[in-house]
Image (cartoon, rainbow, N blue to C red; front, side, top):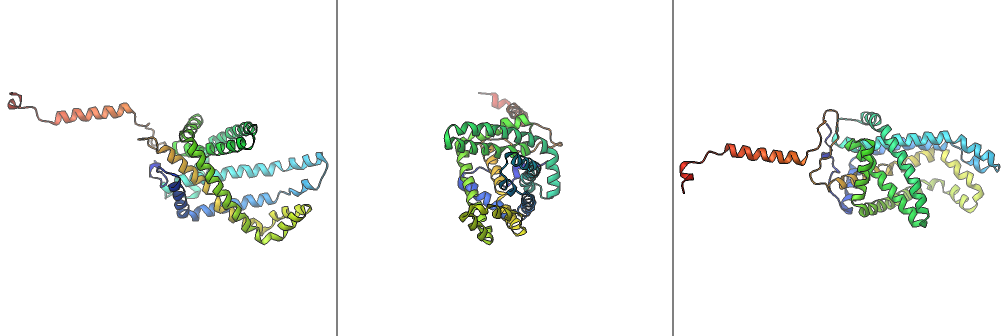
Length: 318
């Protein structure tokens, strides 16, 4: 049985302690998280670099452009599927590894895929459908509405994997629990997601600018002359760019899974007496009920009464 109450991120937070805990956890597990993220990013960047997007800019016939776009559906579908598998494995690794130190990435990854691939896929599809409607509605409220819809969808997405992987409920219960936890501290959660998103974007921008230094000539030529855009697109297929881009992405990829776990544990910490644990096959007992607690108290009172000696005659006399 995996007891997630022992997870190092299982505590109550404010914004300062949340960012501090994310940083401490990230430093402690940086080696393994970086290696896993680097391998994934290397594969994704390589596959993406093999897709020749510049072909679309070289044609003017709409039918030919549609044909080229259709030919890219397969590679992009493979990228989306591989990204989903990686995110699942990385999230489950961050959740389970600190409380199950004897396991490794292969055992954790295999267990995670077998248990959570289908339910998490269904949940992500439902969330994607909801996201489309939410953003469309937000567009009618101009930029602010669309931006709020994106932040709200990110908030819901952050809770889905921790709820599913720690509490192990069904799909319906995962949805209701996710919405309940996300709305419990709604505005603070929205603020946290916004601040964290801005921090990650700033870090990504800085890292992206650093890796573009060796390719600055092509970049500035494209800015000065947009007709050279194909030259910039060809950079994605260069081995040096693939490696540098994978290194930069590996730095930021583990941050959101860690942040989502902090959000989850912080929301659960508001429920006094609630035990957070994974219902494994060897542990089928349900949560403790209020009636059970009162029953145990009554039993203790009865036991205390039976253990006390009977009153003497002198005690009964006035």
